[in-house]
Image 1 (spheres, helix red, strand yellow):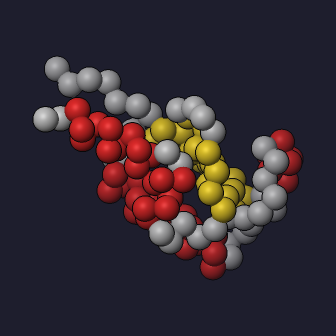
Image 2 (tube, rainbow, N blue to C red):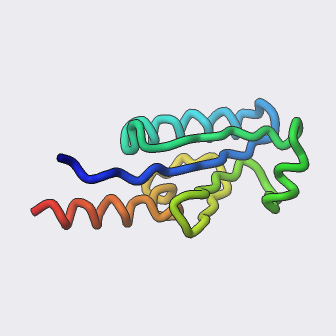
Length: 104
């Protein structure tokens, strides 16, 4: 019986269909599919269509990736092109390394 895996809840804030937004979404989907298959929920929010959501979450720049769950909330701004920085910035690489240490 395998232990229950955490589910990661992420929000990606973009401003329309700009090259940076498209690149951030594509990069993020690749990371999530490679590293977190089936254990994540991703919501993409276009701040041009839903400015109130960006205001509520105090989003000042796009693209911004926010990890909502598990706590603490973490954010990264930019096109997310550096996989390791994304994982470290969202506290995901730390969790991945801790789980590997437990598998001896």
